[in-house]
Amino acid sequence: MKVLAAMSGGVDSAVAAARAVEAGHDVTGVHLALSKNPQSFRSGARGCCSREDSHDARRAADVLGIPFYVWDLSDRFAADVVDDFVAEYAAGRTPNPCLRCNEKIKFSAVLDRGIALGYDAVCTGHYARLVRTDSEVELHRAVDEDKDQSYVLAVLTPAQLARSYFPLGGSVKSEVRAEASRRGLAVADKPDSHDICFIPDGDTAGFLERHLGARPGEIVDESGVTVGSHTGSHRFTIGQRRGLKIGDPAGDGKPRYVLDISPVTNTVTVGPRESLAVREIAGIRANRLGWAGDARRGLVQVRAHGAPMPAEVIMDGGDCRAVLDEPAAGIAPGQAMVIYDGSRVIGSATIDGAGPGRAGPEAPGPQ
Image (cartoon, rainbow, N blue to C red):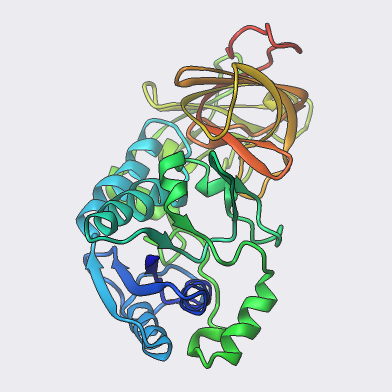
């Protein structure tokens, strides 16, 4: 099989490429240049896609004895990931850029180009498992629960999964680092990337302000009374407590949390923690992965490493609705809702709203 190995310059993608070679595949390494002005070096574990990362990827490819290329996808990345990230925050939503990058870049732009060049699959260092049957390819959680990335891969289509290759899904991270060392890969001890790759200093609020400008507005309570002010609603997400800087305490003396963000009025609504509780989540852009029928039981996960929550889930075309067995807090529009059947991903959707609802599949839509 001809395999295109996406090599970020980190230990995971290097070992994934090495395993593809060892399995007997015809492997070519490719590093994605995603920044117009990449930094020379990474700041520890922050960011990625620096010149240092590109050089590390090339050195790993040399050790493996495989061809290596750099593909400039910076324009596509800026439009599909960075601009989308800014627009989502401007609209009062909380996006996941890693999920969007997988959807639009690694398994769309790269896979499409790879297929056009005659490759059969794209290999990455993601921690997830693919189980291939006669009729379909199933996406499952990785063995290493702490590193599992099935959540950010749940937007892939069945056709994309059929041409994907995740060699690390059955390993834990310590095994991968030890293997890299045995293979003589210099990235064996390189820190993992954290935070958002295109915000290497970790200052998300500052990045958004540079793109959106200062947008002062009011902080109001549930009754609409002004209790404070802010310099930009993009600085907040549903469920947030820190950074509100409200001078007067609540009447009951309890902390207040962000309940809602209105981009139209540029107001942030705050209230007690109990007002965050929702029982029902509505999603759009639903993606079925082995999903049969309309309604079924499942485990719903709304953050990359969040706890899965039992629910009744209904899919109707591109819409998805989950009625949770127990209330949950901090559900923000823009996040992904991923549905599992045990370890298997069976669907996903982008959260569009959430509300108190009521138990049962006939519950009304979120408020």
